[in-house]
Amino acid sequence: MKKEVNVWDYAGEILAGVEKGALLTTKAGDKVNTMTIGWGHLGVEWSRPIFVVYVRQSRHTKAILDQNGEFTVNIPVGPIDKKILGLCGTKSGRDMDKFQALGLTQVEGQTVSVPAIAELPLTLECKVIYQQDQDLSALEPAYRAHSYPAGTAEENNFHTAYYGEITAAYILED
Image (cartoon, rainbow, N blue to C red; front, side, top):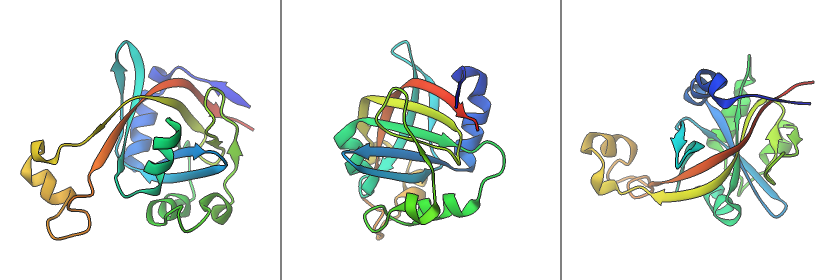
């Protein structure tokens, strides 16, 4: 059962959840993928409730999100099996089915084609209304050195910001 919530009433839980680790889930055709995120913004832009996610250019999730333009943000409520965030943050959906490997339960989306995940019950359904590649030349050098270190595979593996209009917010209940 989906208990609809006012996103602003849960803003603290949403942002704290992202800081600790949440899942970004995408779907294109019959391919569903999820990845751990630790960056995100909740706010209002263009008079709409927005959640912004950041996805590196190299991620499998980016290719799927670019095809569909819809995503869910799945946030833990209460205790969570740390193995979920660990595996989804270190393994690629190119190489494995994370849902099958972890026994995650997909719940059909309400306003998007992307599922929610029962094990992370606080869910935001989002439709991309704007996206922008990061301009690394505009980034403070210390932050660039930390997140995109010179001489590594991450040096030019910047992020794309996806601004998702929040079209539904709910908590999955038994």
